Length: 268
Image (cartoon, rainbow, N blue to C red; front, side):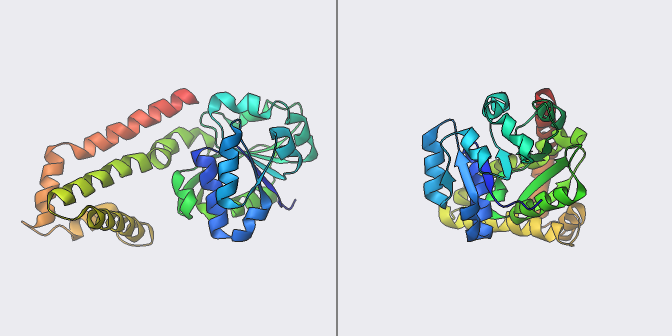
């Protein structure tokens, strides 16, 4: 099939990030996207900010969409699809970012076969730099999977992943931006303490983090080699790293990821 129209159920943070990311990549996408939310004011705000259309109900949204992106809280999945479920018999595609709701769970909501995909994205999809774990349902063809993946590639890197690994992916790519945001805050605070203007400290910290990630991910040295490359004997980096190791920074990050992984496992 050819996916033309896209409907978004749920206009919160991650749903809005998808819409903004698509339109940032291609402004013409605004004409293909319709949004809805249990809180009409949220859908209205997103539509006003992006130029997307608004549906008066989830059923209306599904009626006019080829692909439906479900971006609601896990506990709201059934209610969001209840009235619109029969419309999926027309070959519509369901793409879910609801944490803990497996493909099997989603497929079981319908008395007929539906093309279901499950994603684990992060907020960077808003700026075309997202990381999106991607799993296809049992009935999805290779051609359809490639078409859906192509839409997602407008938002960042798509990583096909067996669903059993989604909890681990959630802990790293889903929760990771929150962990890195805390680290960036710390760099900014340290820069201000050292005398930098806050705006300069933020720009330096942001550029450094983005540049380091780009260097590692685009064919540069691995993290360990890069760390060794920038650490001169008795230099500034060596002095700082000694403090981080002494304070247990490495183990704290590992424990944070493990805690997020355990919580993601509890959600499913």
